[in-house]
Length: 198
Image 1: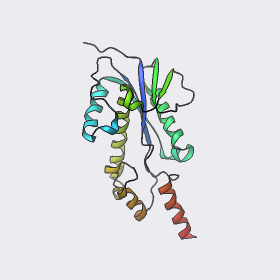
Image 2: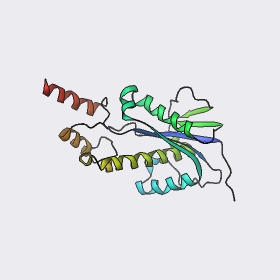
Image 3: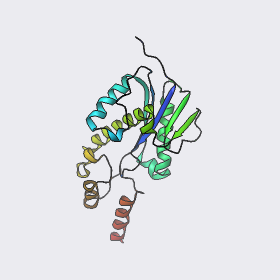
Image 4: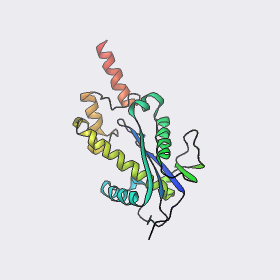
C-alpha cells in the first residue's frame, strides 16, 4: 500500500545550549499512515530509543537535516544561527509544505511558506517531535565522530554541553576550534589565557 503524502512540516533545532559544535535542525513531513504513538520530544527519549525512532521516521517521512557552523554561531549569535539552520533544513525539503510548524517563539526571516511558531511545540505537535528526534540523533552522531579527535572533552557522552567533564577538559586543555568562543565558560577561559600572556 503506497503511503499518503501529508503537506504539514515540523521544524526543530538542537544544540543551542552547547559549548561546542554546530547547531543542527531538521524539517519533517510525516507520511499520513505513520504510527506516531512513540514519537515524542527527543529530550524525553533514551539515546538508543532515539536511534530506533530516527530510522523509523526517516522511512516514513520526507525530511531534511541542516546545520549552522561554529563560525556562524560566533559571528551572528546562537539564536540567529539556530534560525539559519532551520531555514536551511526547510529549503532542503524535496516537497514544499503548505504549512510549517516551528518550535519556539521565533521564526527564520523571509520564509516563502505559511508558518506558525509553537512554544514547546516538540511536546505538542508530532511533526515537530519527529524533527527534534532527527536533529538530535544527527547532532549526537556528529559530536561522537568529533570526539575521536578530541577525546579530552568527553563529547561522545556530553555532546558538547557544559557538563563537569567538559568544563574540566576546557580548564585543563584549553579551547579548540570547535568551541563557541562567545559562550561564557569558553569566553572566560579565553580572557584568562589572554591575561596570562600579557
